[in-house]
Amino acid sequence: MKTRIKEFRAKYDLTQEELAKKVGVRRETIVFLEKGKYNPSLKLAHNIATVLKTTIDELFIFDDE
Image (cartoon, rainbow, N blue to C red):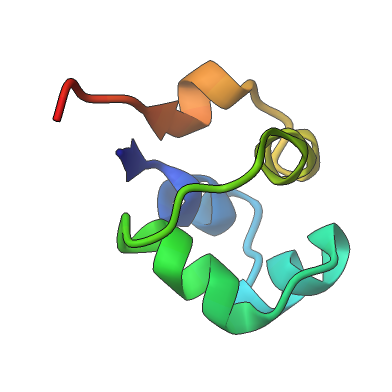
C-alpha cells in the first residue's frame, strides 16, 4: 500500500509530530505509514484523512500485492 500522507502534510504545513499528536499516535507510526511499512486500522486511516481534509481513498493507494 502506498500513501499520500507526506504530500497532504506538506499542503497543510504539518510535521510528522504534529500530525501524530492530532490523531493520537507516535511520530514513528506516521513515519512507517509514509514509508508504506504499516497498514493503519480503519479508525486511524479515517482520523488521518479527517485531519488532512481528504478521503481515505485519496490518501491511501491500495495495490494488488
